[in-house]
Image: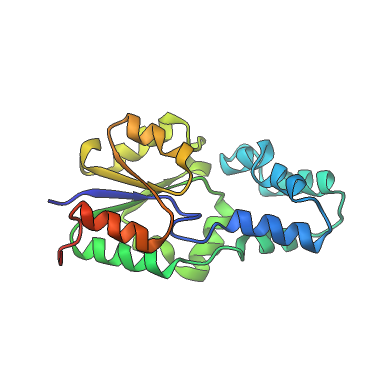
Length: 202
């Protein structure tokens, strides 16, 4: 029986690029990791991911808080280049599609980062559809964005599986009746999906 399988991107399809970028930025510009994280993962980062701050406004706030005079493009490049596809996850998606499952993404993301990653890796072609927070104007774990992804699913919530590396972002999906998987590694994910009978060759 086919299912709808919904993937987070950063930390599942890609490396956890934000965490990596925090370390790289902190090291390069001699900053405290917490100071960098406060921008990328804090209020400004949340507003940027939901389209409430433009890229220019976001990086202006970052430079001001970090006390550095660095081109926005340089900082953005460090962030974006910290993301690399997880080959194991990519292979899993290929197998799931071959088995006839619908593949969606649900991602807290920015327009600029999506454009860069798709240009570099062509990842959007791997998915049937999905939702980005910068277009939805909401981000996980806001329950509304999970309802929005269910509206794109061809199956009811009980036949949907949501895969996410951040446990706090799984609960709203579970509350709506989806099966949830906390992602740790692609090998662990493959084992879990096998137990759910999602591969045609199992």
